[in-house]
Length: 155
Image (cartoon, rainbow, N blue to C red; front, side, top):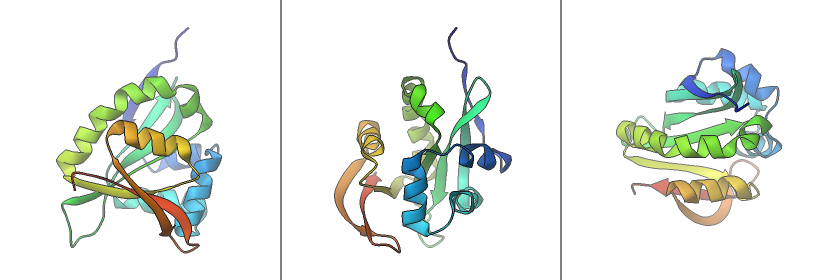
């Protein structure tokens, strides 16, 4: 039987389901960028989100994703983000097929997109390139100075 994949608007309650089973790469990235536990980092991200969705597999949250405003001074800039669980990876093809439509949604909200991805998260770097983001050379980023790639679109 094929899994039922759904995407719906995210709620604050979805955070605990994702954090309880967060992918190791996402946990490391949250800590390296913010030095906050993933639950706190994700709550702050959701609070700043202009739009956020949860991806579900048979009703179980597999990922949270959305776009946040980079700054109130630059309303044309958005910050796309995604945090997932191993369930996302088990059904990645089904989610990949849906991703490009959400990039169009992000661009309708903020025509210039940018964020940072931990260079150790090679799967995420490949996924972002496949979506059409420009991947910049890795450089120190965040309070720990870990190497991250800036990724952009519409710039």
